[in-house]
Image 1 (cartoon, each protein chain N blue to C red):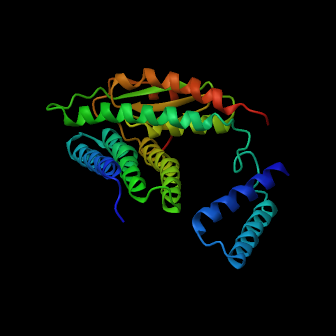
Image 2: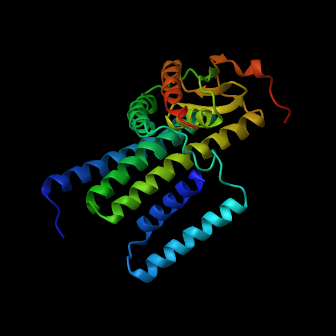
Image 3: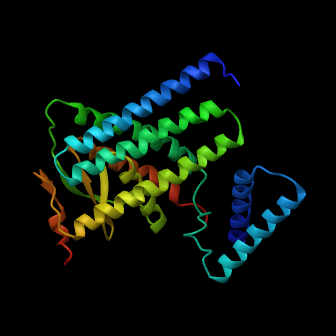
Length: 115
Length: 157
């Protein structure tokens, strides 16, 4: 099974871009200073990293049932991902973890929950 | 009743997408199993506006397309911060008012904020959301997003 050259090229461009975003996300995990900023590096991995990888795979499989399943994987990933991120961030908030070097804090207005 | 039918059709379509085998016997099994799922779900009282959100407007699909572009834009911004030689953060916890009237609308808004890198919803405080932003640059785009969500949520009940 050979794909047209243009589609093959587009697919590999997506894989490269996705891989690059995954690398940047991993680098952010190491470079960023604290828990709160590292969540955003994870956000890069779960959005553009997975998105471009999935698009690359869809281009490989063409208009088949496999592509439909990949779309479904993407939809579920994009609903479950932020839910999990919010759960982690909320747990840190409830536990009283403060972001490093806050410039503006309106969380004080809420009054922190008793942990 | 409309919600029961909608759930049944959605489950059947999902089953067809995952199966890939369309012989009469397997199709019959698919219809049976989706029927059983709908029956159990309705007996458990799970079929409501939360589990079968048919009240959402069709424009939700356009919202997703718009959100995808926003996600890619903020991905670029966060990637630039990570790759800059000296990481310069201005972390913030800000209260974002919600323009939505329903719980479903607020959930979509909060999840959209978390999905775009650079902002994470931390806590839901009545009508407002407490959001952690990486720098001040990420804050203004959220109001725009809130308006888009409010346009999607209110449909016919």
